[in-house]
Image (tube, rainbow over all chains, first blue to last red; front, side):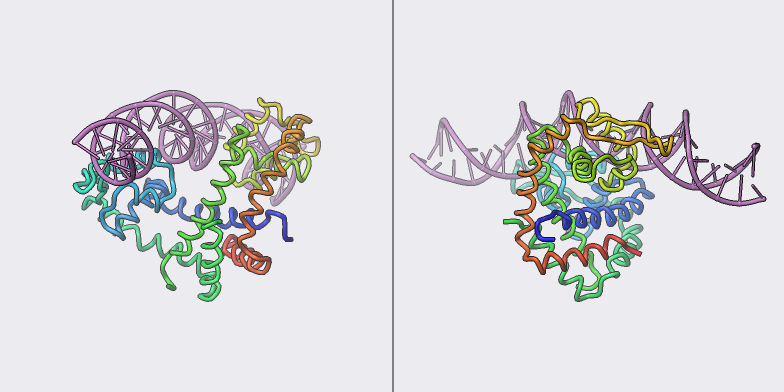
Length: 138
Length: 138
DNA sequence: GCATTATACTTCGAATTCGAATTATTTTCC
DNA sequence: GGAAAATAATTCGAATTCGAAGTATAATGC
């Protein structure tokens, strides 16, 4: 019990379960989970630089460039030079991207939230504490 | 606190943290996390059919075929027809695969286990219970 | 026992991922 | 104030991923 890695297996399984819900959901709208994550960040936080988005969405820098390119082609975002730091870019939702999220986000949120509701409020809070500790590492 | 999806963010972050530890570790041995997962299953459980491995390793069937092909090319596994079910195959470690795992597994295990040790035994047990509930879903 | 349906696995093509190298800009610090 | 190191983002090629379709075999039900 104390020195096996079963906890990891269970963590990965829970992650996969939630990821699959997300994937099934966003795929109907022709978008990847990563791309959705980008739109979601912008939808909730407003314009952000690429670095900040990447930190939130947890992919490699190069994957983020790819994803932003795709979202740009689709007309959901634009990238502008950051006036405060010439190295960076600011990413914004277009009105089309905004409309897209307004249309699909509520149902998406609802579906995931329902899934989380297998835990009561206390358990959910406990889970957060423990996972945070694990995520931070040493 | 009760109807946001922050718990998901934290879950994904913890998952990513552990995955990155795994990736850094196994990449030094020129192997992917998925391929390592296959070898690990076989190393601990003995010969298994493809379906069983896929359930443990959590990838699409087609990804498993790809991974097994690669592991075969590398001489770490063989696939044999399942005598009890003509549709299936039994996957076995070769002696080379066995030796590979014997060489690298202990340090890998140790590294991950250390990471889990940020939680004490009680917390780890609690985490398992909660994650299991989440993984099962409705 | 034969047709239907389900299951195990593979193949295929396209999308996404990563890591390493590159470019451009900013920060550090002497 | 200029060289060296750090940071932001992109490009590139290769590896891995997925989902859909295909093949082969087994189980089901009539």
